Amino acid sequence: MNTLVERFLLVLTTLCVLLASGGAPGPVSAQPADPQPPAADPVSDVCARGKDLYRAGKFAEARTALKNCLEQGGETVEVLLPLAVMGLREGRLEEAVEYGKRAVAVAPQDPEARYWYGRCLLRSGRVEEARGQWESGLQVDMTHKGILEGLARLSIQDGDPAKAYNLLNQIRQQGLDESWLHRLMADLAASKGMWAQSRGHLMDAMARDGANAADLLSASELSILGGEPQAAVGYCRQAVLLEPGPPTFGGLGEAYFATESLDSALVYLRLATEDDEGDPRFVFNLANALEVAGLYDEAGVQFERFLERVPDDAVGHFNYGIHLDRMGRSAAAIAHVSRAIDLDATMLSARVVLAQMMENAGDIPGAMAVVGELKRLDPDNTRELNLWEQRLAGKRGRLQEAQAAGKIHLLHMVLPTAEAVDLVRQELAAGADFASLAVRFSTGAGAARGGDIGWIKPAEMIEPLRSAISGLEINETSPPVEAGGLYHLFKRVP
Image: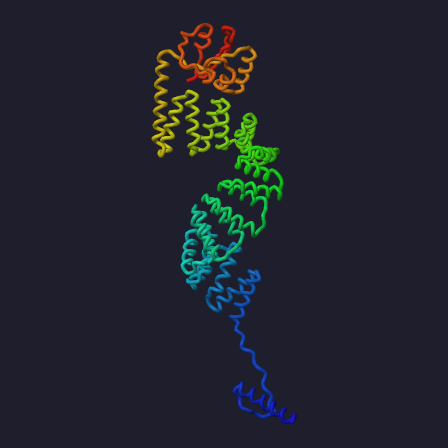
């Protein structure tokens, strides 16, 4: 039984083999011939070897093999593109451009060919041609991430951050979730004043890279700009925990300043500015915080410290000018605000403040000149500026009438003791404003007005006061004059 079964299986197996091979039964003793391998295809071999070498980063050998592939098998995009990419990466730009051009000619509907040809053109300085290739590629495939990124970066160079943001957003919507994309979108959103969106992208980047002090400080700044100072405090506290030191102390001080927590702001801003090599921005913000807190003397020291380190900062000069005006040093204040305008001619607010300072100092022609310039630069406020100009013209008319009548405009200070005279003269020598000192020290009737007693005819004054004022030039202060047991100082103003 077993022998019959074995013979049956043997015969059945033999038949199956013969039928499968399409052959006829032969002599039982005949042995099947060894199968012959297919003939080798030399073109396929060299092309495959070139691609393998390219993928392995062996560019010199890959280039030789792929060029042989082109010669033997003709041009295909699969061979031309690696040659273009290798030329690009090795700085062989003319070669890269040539192969990229040929790849597009062979496969004009291949977006990858358009992308790499555009990359080669861009590296060769042919920006508009690169843009054209990418725009053509986008018409074929609107989701090609490389083309979208390339066009986005060109838009950034063109000064069109909104277009760049929209292009990158298309990449993000396709699911690309990489920190470089989130950071670039954060920068673009910030450049358009989209503070909340910028912070959101930065938070996405931190979620992927992990939080670090620099990113937390950036998130704090974006929160302040976006009107969320309390969130800024939270970010800066985390930054201080990670990297305590002047940068994070300064950031936390600025965040507290934004929340109007002046005591905490001053603590951290002082910590940030203990080292003279620290960020001068924190010195500037410390000066502003001190000014708001009413610590004017220390604020002045910090403003000067900031300008020593950053002498050409327009905002620094402007804020220091306002500080000096508050301290009664009008001449120095006018000089610093004027310097701010010289450094940044677009600061219209500085011109407004300068005109006000000049008017308050009695320099009516100077104030009118500044208002006239404001009318040219700020036509949207012409009506208000015309009214200001008219008021100044009225003052100028009264000034001219008084001068024609032989009158001079005087500030007057009455001091009770010689010690008070010495103190006032020291303040004047240090640059203090006469009017502010009159408010502080004078016992005369005009003290509340900064000692302003209006337009006076010297001839109508009694001696020795008449002699003290008769020869005064504009903005000159008289020596102290004793009369009636009191000491008198005068300043002639415009």
